[in-house]
Image 1 (cartoon, rainbow, N blue to C red):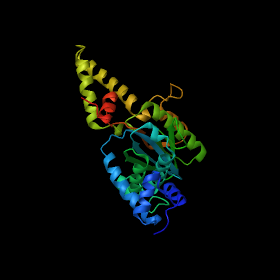
Image 2 (image 1 turned 180 degrees about the vertical axis):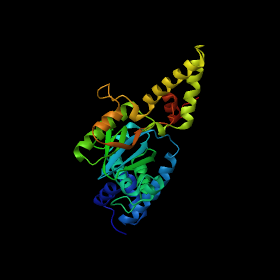
Image 3 (image 1 turned 90 degrees about the horizontal axis):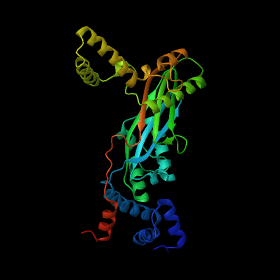
Image 4 (image 1 turned 90 degrees about the vertical axis):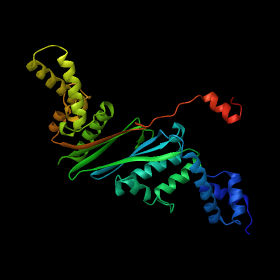
Amino acid sequence: MAEITAALVKDLREKTGAGMMDCKRALTESGGDLEAAIDWLRKKGLSAAAKKSGRVAAEGLIGVASAPQRAAMVEVNAETDFVARNEAFQAYVSAVAQIALGVGEDIDAIAAAPYPGTGRTVAEELTHLIATVGENMSLRRARVLSVEKGVVATYVHAAQKPGLGKIGVLVAVEADGELAALETLGRQVGMHVAATRPDALDVTGVAPEALERERAVLTEQARASGKPDAVIEKMIDGRIRKYYEEVVLLEQVWVHDGESRVKAVVQKAGARLTGFARFQLGEGIEKQTGDFAAEVAAAAGTAA
């Protein structure tokens, strides 16, 4: 059995991020074999991670990555905003965004992809990170856009680090123009999308059920006016146009000047928008709320 030295414990801690006592025990259980100790800790980490998997993870980061004519965006969740500032977590999100560039937006394919420099998959590395950091985490979603000619611009609102933040946007811009100018246009559109949250690129992209629901509401409102049917039809058509201006990107008023339509701005630049994606951290996740004092009391064994 190899001697378990302080240097060996330190080496194991640096490789795994585990606590000192856990590292000592792992080395003891493994007869001083460093690789076997890493495996022992990973097995223990799997058990620890499983206990955390039931907790709601609605914080975390949006990450973006880009390549010529292609860009990817991912959302990785954690339980607290504190973890979003953890360098290991940030590095993981950045790496997963880069992996999505090559693998595509299928979450299962991303999870099964090799994680660089570890011998683990993306999913296994996440489990390792859960065990190290001590919070539940999840790889929630990904989106990849590409163009044949032009750029896919990225925008991250209030970025904590380059390519990492709470709101991310991808914008696909097709054109034969200068790439730098297209990047600038795409970034401006990205800022617009971050602010206005459009549902569709153009009117054909509006979900039929959403349009019918809106038309039904507007019809009831118009009929309540008691005006003739011909007038009511015009009222409804006008309100549907207004609805499109709210939810359709190309029909929206350009936030940068408050006057132009997005469609006109893009056309003036000699470009065409072929797609966009907007991720906002935690949207759609129901966050748990509770009585903090009661939780502390319960943890201390003093709850009634």
